[in-house]
Image 1 (cartoon, rainbow, N blue to C red):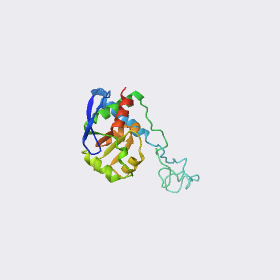
Image 2: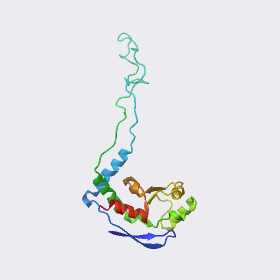
Image 3: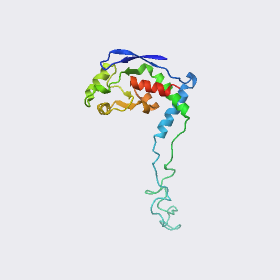
Image 4: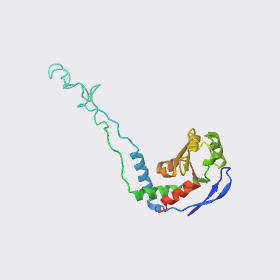
Length: 210
């Protein structure tokens, strides 16, 4: 179990929160996290890229010149891969890149990554009611008060999507906003700092405590 200091909107200590997650063994942690990350990145690929073979390129039905007597190499089609405008040899075709991984393994990898980022984790009180209208500057100032470099890559995790918070954060290029339900390996590893609201931490603890 790890105890985290909870900060309020002004950046002052307002209590503590605990994070108690079952993680992978040290000798297998990096392997299972790597598998989960590769799975997520592969499953994000569309796999729609496609090229045409010599059989699919339009034209090329007529033999360019006769077989013998011209002094040139034999040619049966001007859509050969050796010709300009011809087909592609072993080019990419639409395919499914998705990789399967057991649900228990995926959740174990997610818990392991979250627990490993505890030194970069900042827990704050829910601040949805602090915005009367979308205001990026107010959110940026709050991030600075929480002791985080505003120029660093920040992952902001909230319990549920709030429109005013979303509109305030979307103009910040280095801040990514997600809900606790959309927690994923790539975002956790890619960020320099994690900012989690208390309600989001409770939701994560409840869902991933098994």
